[in-house]
Length: 356
Image (spheres, rainbow, N blue to C red):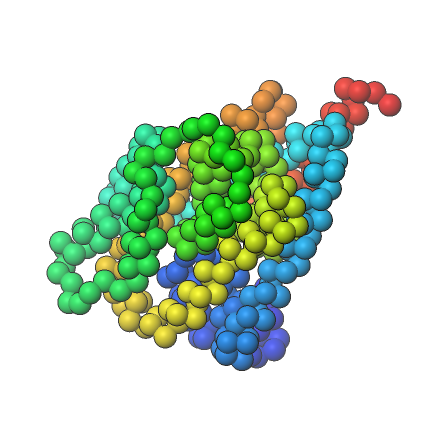
């Protein structure tokens, strides 16, 4: 849609420039679509364009999700609403499976990368910190490429991630429920925005580990509801964080969380843009990104399996998930229609069980 609008219709940038911007967003963490909007604005009008492009892309989704969060808080306990999400959650599992398979075909290009992916799954199952899994996978691939061909210079672009991982425990364990507070929430979403490589669905792995298992601020059902909202509303999938902020702390927390998770994207775009030509030519940076991609894929796989235990509660939800996966993988049906269909099926089941 962006290419159609800014390259073909408006002629703001050339197709070559557009592809150059795609290279940039693939080199840095964060929500690629938001970063792309900010970069287009940056090319057009400098810092002001970066700010306007990014904010205008985020704002509609954040407002829509906040309204849904208000409805969820006030009516989420009604049986009708629970019936709706009963049908949506299995479809979301199918959507995540589709994302894993599609990304897997692009990311796992060699047997070595398949081994790295399997190793990341094992580390995740043993409770190793998610940031450390990403770091280990990336550094391992850098070491492999360095052994194949000694580097001629330093590895650019790795220092921010190395710094971001300091201060985190090696293993994460499910503990007692932590009291909810603003600063841990702010720092968590800042951290996610800084280190989020791969598909936006990797966000789900971080949310599940930190907010469900570790702090116990969310239940798995609430997390699935948040994923559903982020999936069927327009705009970036990271708006899922806005919904979570709203249900945990109202509109103020929704604003804090939204700023925290998107802010690193703005900063990284502005900082890294001048260095893209050098980064693109580095085999070591390419190896690091390849390791991050397969590790992100592994984290997505594990959390999809875990959430499936909550979403697939009976034969109907299992059948709905399987049918949705078939439609997505073989018939390329838009996931929005499947989500709406799942919601309708969930509501119909509620009406059938309760009667008129």
